[in-house]
Length: 481
Image (tube, rainbow, N blue to C red; front, side):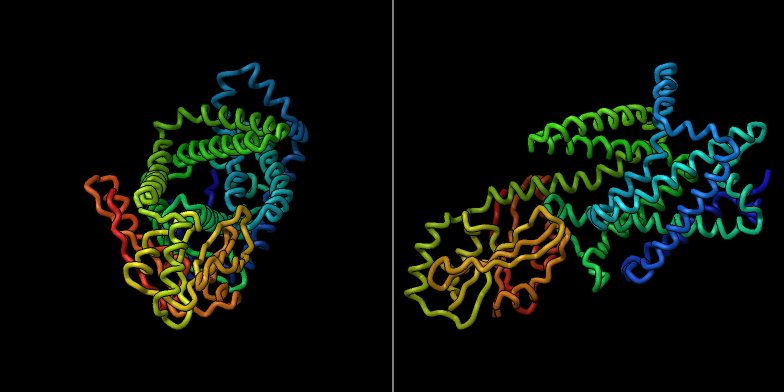
């Protein structure tokens, strides 16, 4: 039997793991610098990659043309009907052939719907040809002991001369695919932050041309630690398949459930029926993967519990914090402010106060005005409103609320990284000071102490949106849980 990589016949598994770790560490070390420049080469490399595996697959499929009949789904249905138990178990392995599509759609918020659809129109037929070619290769070489069908079929066509460049292409494609998943993780976490289900994290822009090119240090290093742990724990890609297949099937079920729920709430009958059918298929795949739980699938659950616990703690804590704060009704606040503005001296210039909305005025605002006596000639309530669309920033000057007090609203897409300073200048606002609330949480309960610790170790609202530090004034407000 020929070795998969000539010259590495006697390499030990531990050495393979060390090489994989070295490549992985190098990839993650590149993330702070951004992938905008080298990203220009990703497209051509992946075009070459999918064209190569498509051609190899098509070549072998021609040697056994009957394999093209496998495109028809009725063969799979007949197999499930005639061999229900074997077919059900086989679904857990069949799923691995579709996991790339799930990973592709994970990056939709980063690249956009149109880009994903165009890419899939090319990628899908190349993958189908490759799978058909592998099946044909097995059928035409039934007397041979197989080690890795994909590499064997490639080498039989390319020969020794082109096989080594092909291996280099395989490594490049693997690195690029890993980069896509890392970027997808950044994108998903950023969306979770902007939708206020995850705590604020330090985010860096890595491109001046592409707004979605971001880098999140905490996510980057946690992913690196998780990947290295997986290397030592599973050792081979075959062992890792159990955890991967179970994780992807779970994601598909969760996605299908929310898709069905959204179409139901919007009363879109046609899409609702379609999403229900997709959900049933996802559930079938998910159940078929249950046997993988004791074989490594449980690690998917363990790893998923970490961000899930943080999100649950954060959302519950934020809700508890909001309910525990003593807000002032808008009408009551306006009456007090009008009297204060008419009767007291004022500081020259403009001051900005961060508020969520006008229904309830946060305690730090009333504390600043009425307790500390800080009053500017021009006082601006600034509200940041997230839109349902991924992109777009709009600044609205809502006008005067009372004499000396006005409202400015910035609406932004959930994938936008706001430049607050630029938005304020375009709105004609040149502030001297920016005030915001700092909640000091006092509690005896362990769960809320954990929430308080989470708030302390993550960036504040003004740090996340990069408000100019020289103008910031934090007003402490005691909150008891």
